[in-house]
Length: 265
Image 1: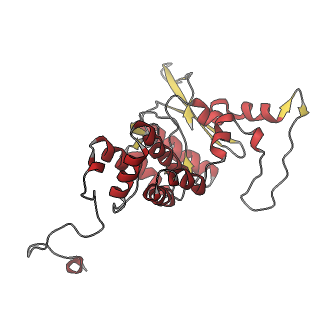
Image 2: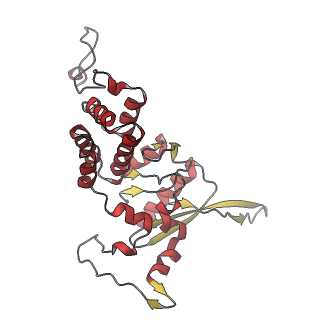
Image 3: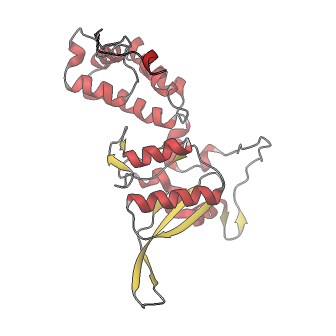
């Protein structure tokens, strides 16, 4: 999903006043089924309304909402693990989906919505002649494609899977491999984990494979695996300390004034 660069305008019939309007566009990448809606602005509340209207119109919910690093979505941009603002997190929680921003300055990551329906039609037809043919899938909800027909950015992601990342992490060490497997397994929508895994592997170039392995060892007992955990350990040289970052054991000390969960049942 995205907002178009050019704005439109509408006229108030009662006053004659001209109001600017932003254009929200969303597309289902496999169809490509397209939704377009005019909004008052690109602010968070208008984006949420447009996304809600879009899902109502589609009659369903997608596994992920993919857009760029717009301010209405991201509180802090990052190549591998952007921070989503609370409003969009709550929206994703309500619908049972994830927010997956594209990489900064990589418009090809959302090439379909950039070109909308025209881009897809150009891939399949040229001067009225069919130039591609895909075998129909008889499985409900499934589709078929050919790797060479995919956009170049998507071809790069086509080989991403848990085993491929685990093999690469295994070249760093056993703790790194275990951490990467755990990281990806956390997400029903694995692309979120893939991006963070890619970021962790890239840290081996910035620091060293040995330090990344030590950081993964230190973070192994943490409640949840993530890119920022490893990056912070390396940034603050905590991998060179023997103390574990976080364990699953209860870190709250016993005290007479602390009530357990049974008290509230």
